[in-house]
Structures are given as C-alpha cells and as structure tokens.
Amino acid sequence: QRLDLSNNKIAGTIPTEFGLLANLDRFAVPANQLHGTIPSELGQLTGITWFNIAGNPSIGGTLPTEVFDLTSTTVLGLSHLNITG
Image (cartoon, rainbow, N blue to C red; front, side):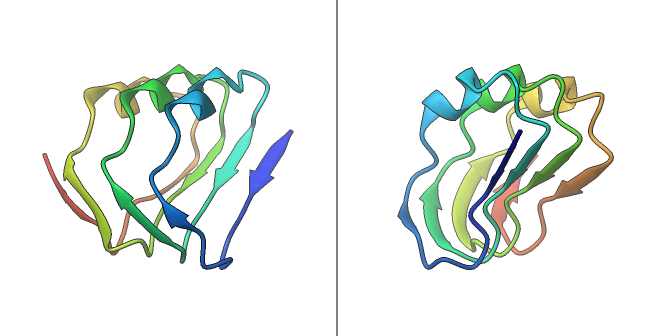
C-alpha cells in the first residue's frame, strides 16, 4: 500500500500515527509545507521501500536513529530539510 501526498501544500507536522501503518511500502510527502521533527515512530515502517519527505525545509531537528531501521528502503529522500545528525 502507498501513501503519496506529494506536492499538495499540506501544512502541519507529520503525525506519529503514520508509524502504525505497517502495510505501507511507499511513504511520500515531498514538496509540502510540513514542519517540526521527523517522528521516531516512522522507524516502525520496517517493510517500506520508498521513504521520501524531501522538500519540506521547515522539518528540522535531529534525524531519529530509528530511520536506520528502515533496512528495506531503496529510496530515501531527505534533501532540502533542516535536519542534523
């Protein structure tokens, strides 16, 4: 299953509940107006192959270490963010 909300001018934070969507293989929310931090709960999406949140420059903070648990991921879009770590 895919959640692709690319280029929709969506504002707000990434809900932690997205980490509960265990059947996702693609999570894409690039080029929106998201802000805040990357929820560590997204690290629960262990079967995901495509993870793209690029182009949301108001997403900041430290990159959660749980992102490195996404070992099935072949596309990881983290460009144009304001993250460290």
